[in-house]
Length: 136
Ligand SMILES: *[C@@H]1O[C@H](CO)[C@@H](O)[C@H](O)[C@H]1NC(C)=O
Ligand SMILES: *[C@@H]1O[C@H](CO)[C@@H](O)[C@H](O)[C@H]1NC(C)=O
Ligand SMILES: *[C@@H]1O[C@H](CO)[C@@H](O)[C@H](O)[C@H]1NC(C)=O
Image (tube, rainbow, N blue to C red; front, side, top):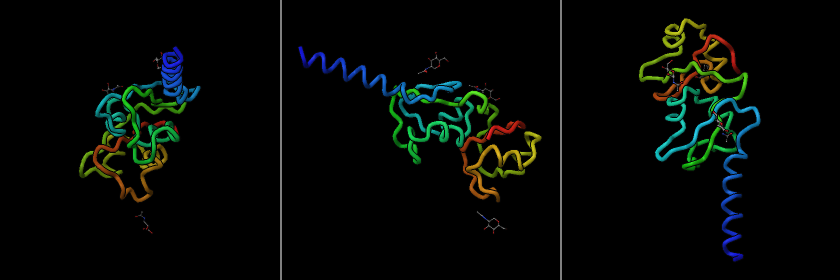
């Protein structure tokens, strides 16, 4: 009897814990499925690498190696949710990406603070916000 009760309380606590992590002003969310990696989630849902990490700081660790299947994560916060994104390909530069979306390179850098000012740290499959609007 106590064992069953304890199991139910534990299960309820686990569900609560997974959902309690979402910020109150979460604009959209996703449930982690088997095989997900952060940049894969970003590409699938049009969320920049920076935004996914920032919105889930304290939930998803810096190396993104603590995702749990079934976990609900927030994708963007209301009013700060860039949904115009681009998945970096080998050979891309900030200039080529900014030109392709007709945005100033400064806008690209402002919206993606994880990209250094010389744009020397882009990597394939990184997801960038390529909106002309400033979100960050
Ligand atoms: C996730 O978003 C859906 C609607 O898009 C909402 O119904 C649901 O409550 C959200 N989940 C959480 C845990 O907030
Ligand atoms: C992501 O963006 C692409 C390109 O604009 C679009 O075709 C696709 O429908 C978007 N996907 C989602 C999940 O919003
Ligand atoms: C960026 O360029 C500046 C000036 O050219 C240089 O001093 C700096 O080390 C570079 N930074 C990176 C991260 O490449």
